[in-house]
Length: 353
Image (cartoon, rainbow, N blue to C red; front, side, top):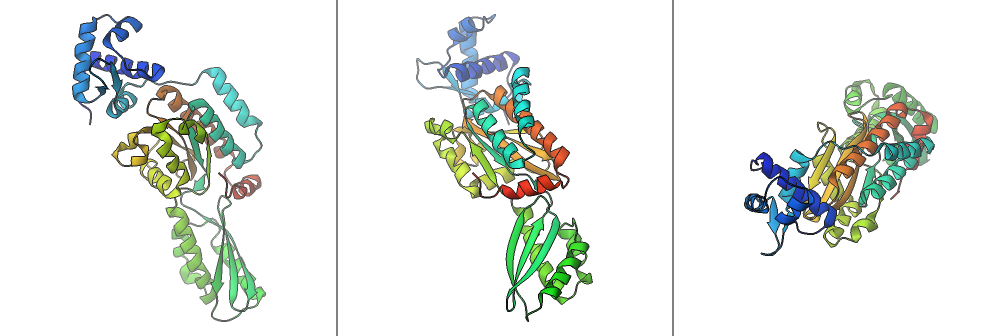
């Protein structure tokens, strides 16, 4: 994927990236030698920078100017040269304290996570609400409304509530509908799509008709990358001309769903860094997005992340995303197994920003 670099070339590329991130200015060979007390001449550094330019890791905007990293240069730096970095202990303690001061309220945790990441990264942040994988049946109610029309209220594990109208072949009394709902609640408690499909032969005609809608609801919920979205710091990236297009990522759910489905697949763990849209998303061509899943992975999880310009403090931002994801995972790991507070608070997080 990357042209191989010598140890010295790696050192110079890392210094160019770090210097440009800190100053925002092109970096010259003399600047590197003096600023970092390099044990090599300016001519040697200049020759190595020419090689890095030929490889496509850095570029020169003008003949007499210094170099700046390219998208490929940033990518090499992040994937091969970025050292493990942790937020300062005092900052970790402050963030942890904020979470522990919050109520047992997932909505508040997600808003807090978004605010902390936006402040720490000076970029935009996003947090998607956690949801089960696969989704599971929790409870159903059938309510007679008018004639043959019945309102089906389906509650999924995690608190999501779906409502749908069902037209029966003939009117039925409420007592018959309640009896069918009670039987389905017993038969399908905590069941997945596959679990329910395997029990269809136990059902009468009414129960079978209702269950077809339940299966369709579970299928759509499983295919959806996220439900509710929380965000903060959008104004931070509006100040950067190159990142304004990235606001579309936070505004258009279809685009965000596409990015998350390709970058947050079930087999991936840890922090993922997407630089310049990776050639797939034009809206991110001048941006970097740092993402991590949180929660009880493969059971009940969401995604957090930050979006900013490619010239960002990668070590700090990766560390911030990782640390907040770990905190969120810890809280959900303690409380996600069906506590009443969790169920109600998840259900409150609808139609939020």
